[in-house]
Image (tube, rainbow, N blue to C red; front, side):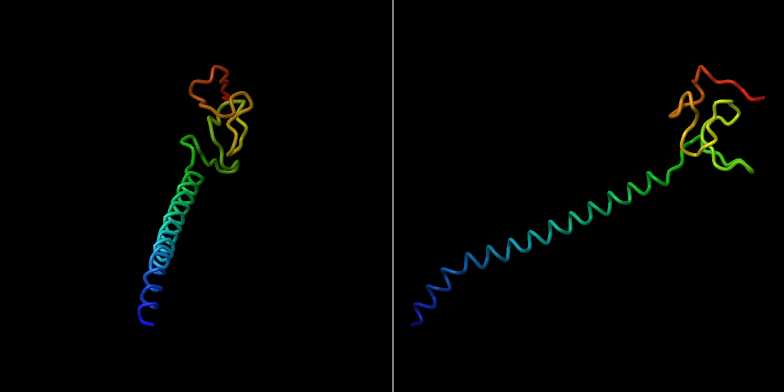
Length: 99
């Protein structure tokens, strides 16, 4: 009877070890995935919070990007102007001063 139990235990040992190893590897993979997702979320939030270099707050008008002395400035924190919405204003050949 003891030899039968020993043979059964030896036969089931690889299956049990495989199950335990697979469970451990799945937990490690899940932890790595959660860490990668958290890092991606942090990076996305940082990129959203980063303001453009030509961001200005003008009292009475609000937030603007681009050169707000140009007549084409959209007076918006999202779009620079109607002619060159993505910028940059410094090299725009259609710049016309309001002043």
